[in-house]
Image 1 (tube, rainbow, N blue to C red):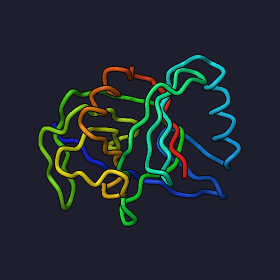
Image 2: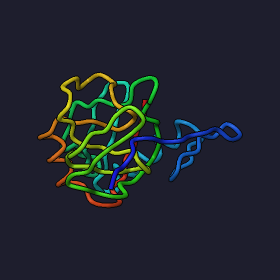
Image 3: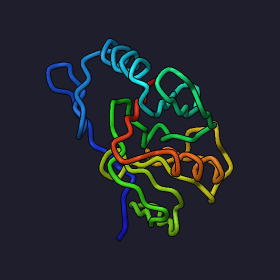
Length: 156
């Protein structure tokens, strides 16, 4: 079954609406992060401006990886999400790409996923269609560590 790295977002009355979150302002991010740091729960932080992923266990950072997020024409959108589905391997297709055997796929919003990338080595540079690409060994570690429902915080 093919998956798609695509997302739709819109603003309504100044609020960004995503499929599983509503964000009014930066305070929502800060509050969610502070709550997760106090919880002891596993969670994932994506820093778009720094092109890094951080895995946390409560307030303890346990893992970091350089990543590649969406390019300007197909950006990765900030938001508060949860891992919805996991596949050890999947096929991803869009209007201008068809990539078989994408490894360690963690879907967090419709066709948007965190996954390994074997087709490029431009980590640290936004190159994707909105997904979050990781080097293969880091994608494997994250896939094994992550459970369905793990929170994902994406911010600038």
